[in-house]
Length: 612
Image (cartoon, rainbow, N blue to C red; front, side, top):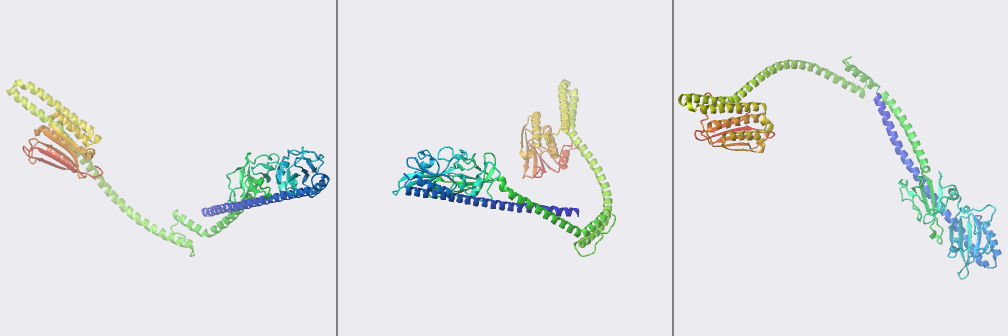
């Protein structure tokens, strides 16, 4: 029950958390998109307002140029000052208004500047001769509040506007100019550009086509904008913001400043009219990264907490419902546990027809079936124990017989080994002794030579006995394989007899090396020993081959005097031993021979493909 409740709580909390994160992410992206759209619209609106303000002041200067032409600039300075005073009253943001002739001499001005002052070095004069012009100059040069604002010297100036004065024929006869303070700009733009460059609020700048800051804080003005596009993607998912100098508005983008701060930047071209389009001014509004994401993150956190609260409430309601619905299951579990502890033999089946009641009925039936099977299993177990006891006694008897058979087989093996070694040696010694007795009676002079020969025979017998003992201790067939062991045996045979002997073995047969290979090796040794002692052969052929991939065949043939293999030889057990050894490993042994026809021994053993 506790596990079910906790599972419900965990699932509800997990789903609520996932939903909260998802919904919060959607809301956050939506807020960011709205914020960036608003910033883009505000930037475009401020750029439009700035362009209209500049166009209206430039229109006033153009109107002043028309008035100047009407009153004829030479000799009418007093009338021009009255016009300039009226313009300053209409546009209080104009610090001064002046007109200069083509030589750069100030003809009239709204200030107390001497009429003979020269302005040839002023940018507005040189540009105004060519057409309408507006420029931004250094604002860091300020004058005291009581000093007049002049065309030259230290003025708290921000922007100059100028227009040429033309006569009736269109020839330039002078330049009319005025100086603007920042108060002529729209109020939102003034507020955004006030204060230092590093701040935690929005900031507006005016850039030229090269990205140089024209209007802005003192520490930025006159320097290029050095923001670098950041990896943060714009939530609007549109084109990135136009870089400094671009002429078309685009989606805002995040830029990283040299001090490590990240700001969201929106740019919009300032439309100054066809005459001043070449200036390429841009209005740039930037907001700190933290300010952009503050509202979106706060909304996402609120959604997360609300979703978690709803998830917790849902989990609590689900847990209470699950607890109510599983009370019957809890009682059934207790009843089943009591049966498991052998406290009772029956399951308490609750009433009703719901799933719990059906489950209890099924458990009761299973319990009855298990109890019945347990009784049958006990009866079967008793019968099996009785049969196991009988089989155990039988196995012990067979094991005893198997041990006796192993002892008998080992005795037969020793007997064969004794026959192959000591018996042959003893027979040779016996022959020598009989010969010595005859020589002692008939030819005593030759006894010494025969004694030497008898001693040699005794040495050979001792050597063979030692070789047999070594073979019993060291298993050359198991270590090197049947092919290599036979090759060495043939070499020893050649050394002893000097007979022309040929040995061949294929690769599959040569690597055979289990206990059956030992028997085949002993058969080959016995056959070679018989050839050495009885056959009087001059040529021997030994081959070890595989036949049809299923049989291993040993074949030994000689061109000796032969014998009758079917005739009994009392007191000789060589052929009997060969047939016994072949029978032990399930091999077929075939001996073909006749007097003066030579002898062929063939031993065939059926093998499995895995062994070969």
